[in-house]
Amino acid sequence: MFTDRIDAGRQLAKRLAHLGDDDVVVVGLPRGGVPVAYEVAKALEAPLDVILVRKLGVPFQPELGMGAIGESGERVINADVVDMAHISDNELAAVETRELVELRRRARTYRADRARIPLAGRVVVIVDDGIATGSTAKAACQVARAEGAGRVILAVPVAPADWTRRLAAAADELISLQTPENFFGVGQFYRDFSQVSDEAVIESLDRAAARGVAMSKDRPPTRNHDIGVAAGSALLGGHLTVPDQARGMVVFAHGSGSSRHSPRNRFVASVLHTAGLGTLLFDLLTPEEEMNRANVFDIELLGQRLVDATRWIRDEPAVTGLQIGYFGASTGAAAALRAAAAPDSEVAAVVSRGGRPDLAGPHLAEVRAPTLLIVGGRDDVVLGLNREAQAGLRCESRLEIVPGATHLFEEPGTLRTAAQLARDWFLNHLVPAPASSTG
Image (cartoon, rainbow, N blue to C red; front, side, top):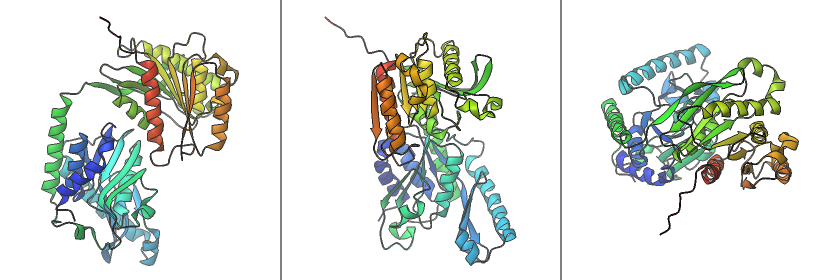
């Protein structure tokens, strides 16, 4: 039994303390989830926002949810309820329209002139005061993913015993302090479960914003913006993040079918940022070049793009003097190794996640930069290819196997493990060791 939502939030924050070093955004589900989320954000020293979704109630029985809708238009529909209640397309559309009006009202009410906090590439912790049917929370998770969240965690004080079965695919991690068998409603687990007003939600957001302003005065500024990357004759879209007093720089090479917007690479980048490492995520091909599928697997072309981008980024004032490393995923790993094998390459470290280093072929023996190969323990084929590729390397190398992970590292906790391995490798090889003093 929780005393109230504040008590529940403080207890939940203790469970989430391990996220304190990550690039976290806490978002609360209005209205009841916001006081809980405020306590979590305060403990994690993270920004707080609301994530706006609305239940779509059956017209003649509004308390029965047939789905939910988010402020960006994402929706979750329970087809079984729609079929059972014989809801027509027109009736469903009418309910959606009405709820969108309420979503826009709440957005104006809660945020006023404040912009939404960007979720792209960050660890997004979605908080509510409890889970009942889960349709609203599921929609909130989809909204966060659509915004490019690197990792989605759904955290609540209490949920039914079977909630993980129902919501397993909604988030990367599900956390509940209590999962009782005899669950009749969220309110039964609170001594004070009084309704939360709009004014209380606004007060929580205002207090969090004021705390964020105060905290930002003690934090080093970060250069964080979209840029055009000059790579040979091509101008490629990119995103550059360089913390003040950065300790090193990592250039990302994404795999086939991906781009600089890759949620997984953005998540890895966020972990590197917390360690003081700058990152450049950029598209290896122009939109016109991507139309030719052969270019996506042209390792020579992609490797040269990395070489050109590295030369270009060295001229950026914020990057001058920093050691540079490569992070490659899938086919991007082969491109990173091909670039690292260039005769004039000065890259100081390479990390491959779920990569295809074998595609670098004979150039593997020419790589001089220390190389870390990260592979999922359940990615059998790629694991074998990485073992063979490591045998062809003549530089310092290590193969790390992440237990339980498949090729895309979608299993809970596996992408974080891979990101932390990459972070440690780059810190060891990009950051100069402090000079020892004798006397």
